[in-house]
Length: 527
Image (cartoon, rainbow, N blue to C red):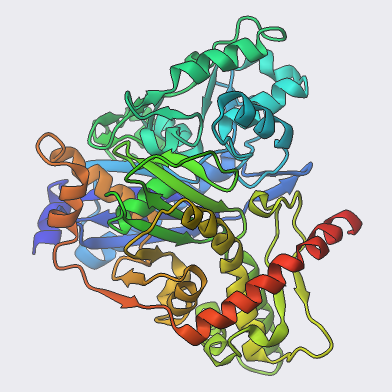
């Protein structure tokens, strides 16, 4: 059996992704087929008004996830892997991990979810004439400068979560271009950090920090297919304290979850696009031309190969929907039933299809954190209805699903105003494991065909494993061709066109949603 031979000979490829609620590991063969997978659940903490994860939790989760993976491989195949052909690491993009010259973390990890860098975001965007969202690493650094945080004097290295894990595994301070593009703007001509903007930043902070040269603080950039380093003895012991895992394995450059999502949906060529739904929700549209002007709703980032992408990123995705599902599971247990979480979630999601097209007049704001796309500084999840709205289970669940997609739809309208069109949106994330539900309602929300394929539930761990597999092909094959002809040949997918009735209902919902945003902002002020 090919899988057994690959495992026995160190020919399988390992992908690891640290998502917002799960750390996942995935083993694939050379053709991209999944051999085994495992996961570890974790959650961010809101500590001193900062969304964070501890570095101890990072390593506890990684070790548990990896141990579960190799144990399952041994149980199924009778082989405990000791080596791999390649490894890839991915994680949530953006945020702030700042280290001193002794490699000590200076302040707790500030994740993408924080919305405390508004002044920095506005000033840098104006200075660069380039949108710098609040979650970008450079916004976090500049906000720390503006706030006179004492640790700034000691900053020696900045990186992302994927870059940090990769550094600890390999000793290499590098980053894939896609993840790097969420730290600091990228020059499309050089695929490096934009030199003009680097100089502008240094000049901006010179009065307070005359010795700061931001280029020296950032990771080196690698493109897809370029090796990012090799697993060291120390790195192998970090991931696998049992001592079974051998050093010397090549790693691809670490990438962000947006980049691995593009790979996982075969959406790296111009005019392709994908939507990823998890704790956050974002759309990635690969551009075939420059946008006419800067838009605060849009990030300009890159594919793992360095091509420019317009990103519509919304901080709040499916978490609130999951919380409601847990409430209904508690109710089921209270009346003597004991369904598992996935069963309850699927049943509620399916019930949304029975709701009225406009959700019966109900509104659901899923804002657990602030939402820059709608200029909302802090989040307060809300269900809002008028006395004449129809509160039914079906309408409640349709309103919740619409709430997941509403802010994304507002951002996508900005792209439409630029004349940017896509042939279809490829969707992935756990929300799409329930066939035909979220896919149908997303098509209504974005008014475009939505494609869901057989890898749509695999996510970024599979995507970064594919990027690691690409190391062996990059010399003579562009990434888009590798995906199209080697990984996605024979790809099975379903496409749903927008339904006219759903579309009309969603537009009515979105009009009420937009009109009600002052209620959401007032809730944050009052509660």
